[in-house]
Image (cartoon, rainbow, N blue to C red; front, side, top):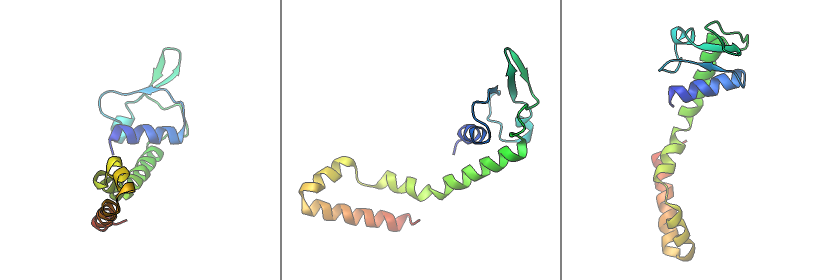
Length: 115
C-alpha cells in the first residue's frame, strides 16, 4: 500500500476533518510526523499536533493495522487480476463449454492464490 494512502486513512480513523500539510514524503516516521504543519485557525499553523487523539504512537499503530489488513487481501488482488473478464463471463452464460472452461480457470486461480 502506498504510504500516503496509509497515512491519510490512519489520520481519518483517529480524527476526521483534520487540516494539515506536509512536505514531499508521507509522514511515516516520527521525524516526519513532527514536521507536519497542523492548521489551528485561519492562517495559523503549528508543528505541534493540537489533537490529543493523534499522536505518533497512535498513528503508527493505525498505519500498521492498515498494512496488515492490506497484506491479508493480497490473494484477492492477485485473483482479481487473473479472473476471467466480464466479456468472457457473458459469453459463458450462453455456452456450456465456455462456462466449464471459466469454472476450471477460476478453480486454478484459487489454488494458485489461496486465502
